[in-house]
Image (cartoon, rainbow, N blue to C red; front, side, top):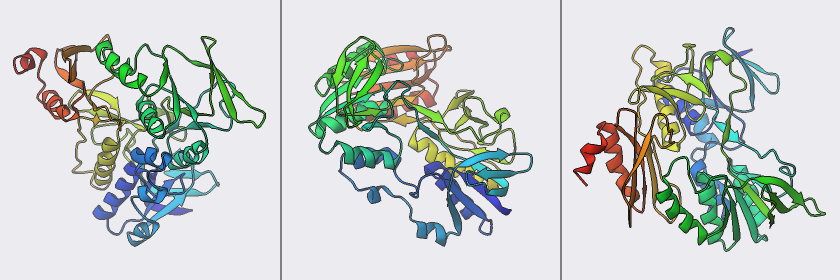
Length: 396
């Protein structure tokens, strides 16, 4: 059995940054980076540019195999089948067993699939990996009618991408307006107007069945309303299923549960990226990750802490994300609305829409801006200073 000082499971931005940081902090340590994809780390946030043909897959690569070799970081393309925290071993899907001193888990998630009949037809795509983007690019070249399912970041970015390619776009979402779980209806109306110029949108709708032509390719979708949508391809963006099946159950809640140092209850297991629920020292609660920036920074901090357990660094970051759309949109801090613990207040509308979210104490914990993404710096400052609504109204 081969033994490593550090095993990193997951070779995306969090895992790769973790491996590189470990090498910097432990020059003689043995390190292996394990991932399922054939590619070294790439810019996952830009895979839409590959789907549209604007960039080649190689242009998204952030590291090369040669760079890993120069840093003496082994790379294994495989899936981890199980992790035995008692014996400190992992088992790969090929049966190989590896031993470790410490492990960094950065496996992220896989695209959630539709469960309806026909979801496995040719021309139905999830959208999470570089291979997904290549598949979409190659398939839609001679297709015109494209349907998107999902009301999140992938959905709205795909609407813009396909519209700009001159495709006839249809969008199916479950809510009354786009991002209903994060944006007030006033902001939702702005988004609905933006989308209506780029796609035919079916609100409060779900896919009932996906049907094929005689060649086995997707040809139409039936909605729960009974509406039939002719289509030549379908792109699905309905969230992630976390890659945690190999982890001990006692270490997980929604994901791998870690503290502010990104260390789990097992002191030899650390985590970073989408897979974790980390303790947010600012909000004093456990929360999930979800942005590229979070994953990138968490990888570096986890990589440092896994080596220097006696002087660990806190992870603390107010997340922010701007979708790649021509309409400027920015999300800052806590944006998923919870009627029991949060209140959303629209403080500005017109050319610039500003919504702030407050917690049970009335403190600003997040917000949304439409029309001026640069304004997210102001909201981030409010969150950091724990201001209340009355504090900022006087400044507007």
